[in-house]
Image (tube, rainbow, N blue to C red; front, side):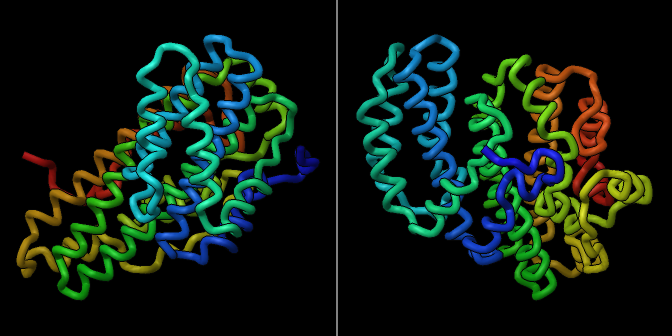
Length: 326
């Protein structure tokens, strides 16, 4: 357990400083290794819990966590894992009962095959503020999201650089890769929906002041796509523990609209931008739906308005300057 419940931030709760140290900024392979390590460790955590208490809710969570691991090729395509991991996970999911021993062995082996410093970082950053098992799942899920946000932000920055260099196809490939990751997120949401309302209520009491909107990578995604409007900037400034992000660099939308008339394959790139926007919007709507289910209309942590804030945010496009699709 951690003892920073009075002075902690979102960054300390998730262990982002350690994350930044071990993944070495925009090293996609290492970020994907971190995502894989967090997902595999989550599945092992739930497998141990199911072995101790094989009740239906726990088995449902184990199945959801196992499904995430079987789809790591989509969540973390830059991380090479033994194919036996996905195969044993798929086989376990084919059974209605608890047959996860072979999968757990494969998962433990796969975890040990990842870079030692990354596995160590994942293990050391599981610091819940309560003794609830649910909070361990919650932290691991947030860490996976952070990895996905980091990869998405990196992809958008790379796409912008490629676009400005005239490499339209490479820019589109970067965006499509990010979209593929985001399109897998509903599987991660299925893990989070196993959180009992009463458990999250307890966790919220110990994590006041921490909110995913404080995530630097999350905001980098938004700010690197299009210039933020004044209302959004004002809202961000009112949220607790949000650090400044320089929004002065050229955004992907600005680069595209400026060069659109001279691009060799503008249609393809715009399709990739719209795909990313759809995937990001679907992720935000999923987040809103889960929040509405678990916390209802109460205020959110970190100074947000909770589900109502997420509902409004879910309607915002990453690329509001693009013309409406026909």
